[in-house]
Length: 321
Length: 316
Image: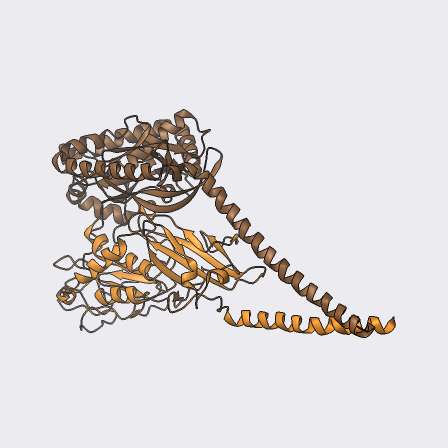
């Protein structure tokens, strides 16, 4: 009897070993063919500006609104995801970076329709089911349907740059606490008084000076860091204004020519930003920017900080007429 | 067969049974999972039965609504001024959502909404979208909950044209559902709730709402007034001294800019209490061009017992 029991045990072990090996092998094979659960940085943008407001979100992408209003979030992931592989993932879609996650299986998201010049932002998290760790995060920025066309049309109109020659030379620094670098004794005043600035439009800038309107109604803006040094590149720097900022009423030309195109460019680069709107008197962006991409670069090329080859001025110097 | 052989045979037989059972179990499992999914699908399909049954009618209806749209576009070209007159009368009572020449009955997700609120909502919705004359019916899947059923709407109303401005609560608007062979525009519960809040705000500030109507009438007739009679301080709210100085030094510029446009009456959803210490009543509205198309957002504030237009800071 003892011998019989041993034989049965050995027989069972012999049968189970191949089964166990088969199971292990399938598991290994399965792991090998599941792509990495990461948003594809060839498709989405990565944060390249110094901003901490978005928590763990460091990737963003713009999507122009389409009437079907649906996007399969899988399309932003690295690798190829078959229908059966998709089933291992779950998604959380929130309206802010600080909201907690609510998980769902569906990767297809129905988004809303933003008004003109606006975006709707969705904060996406993805993870493998039954795990606690979030694999990756993405800010999906749904851009109004006309924005890309509006920006492209605006950009195509920026061929004549002769107006930039009219802009005055920039002062290379301002004194902190702030005082005007342009002497009141200058025969022609080119610059307005400096003011403190704390704006998402010019991250990192502490002081700005706007030029007075030129003969043909153009304007310039110089931005300075907290030490009073002129910022000459990047988003913190001031930009040339084709229409002087005093023309700022009811859909003004300054809005159309200088402000709205900047906001469009930022949105198309995947930044979840709107104008702060009428109730805030359009003074700011709704949120900070996190990525400076091709569209913002093209804006800065059309509205440069260093607008012409006039030499920078030192404090106390007068601009030539 | 000796005993030893018998034992080996039995052992392998049991093992084979185990393997077969596991295969059968996994097969049954996968079958069950599939049938679960089918049941889910069937649920939606069952709920959408009327949509499917009326598929052909749907197509015909779509075509007839398309035809309406074409007719409406043609009429618009011919009777443009008549259209503008209608727009001015956007507050007229209707229990349908009208776009161009086509009207859509509405279906409320929350059918317990009072008849009064339903009417207020429909009027306001017609006011917000009054400048849109064109639409398309597009494929879009939206989960809705109507008459106690969870349904999936597969069509949506897509308005297009200039002036794409609406309150944020309308960002997910447009789902259509077929009832009695007619497309009904779905009014989401979230929108009804937003209007409940707006009506509560209006209830608290009835006099201010009435005063805004008068203020807008006044602003819209400024061009007929002598500029010397206009007190800029009573029309505009200057955010700071620098702005005030600049704008008051250029009154003609300010008034000529303003007289180019008309101001639209704010939608009910566009009244808010301004955050901050003073908690002032504010309203967002739009400047309209000559074709009554909204072209730019502006804000109005009730301050010192009167409404004023909030002016952007000089040099923004």
